[in-house]
Image (cartoon, rainbow, N blue to C red; front, side, top):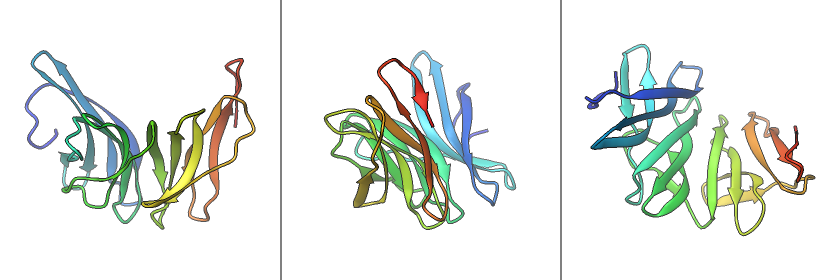
Length: 168
């Protein structure tokens, strides 16, 4: 059960840290009560809470959480599509903006995150921290994205080709 949420809802777990804190996306399509929100769930206490949005946005998704509780994901709506980094699950996120699309998909123990962004061209993978993002080279013709990174900074992802094939 999500704290403060009374309507029927569905949810997806998308990430978990070594303390078993789970993050993901919850949503309701009940007429008159439509919402999509990132959440954090602590199985030890049974408490799950919705993450606050940033910049007046209406929707969010939490993709990953590290052992320090840093959560990364997406936050979109009124101000467009932005990546989000929650350093505290009770406060609005630090927004990653200035791109057509950006969404971090994983975060390591140092707080470095990885994901995909679009900035006037094909999607590309990136790594970085707030204020310092680095696009990664890709070898496909249609774009790429980073799916995960480890504490040593190694990144895995995929690249796509025009014929709709993908390569890790």
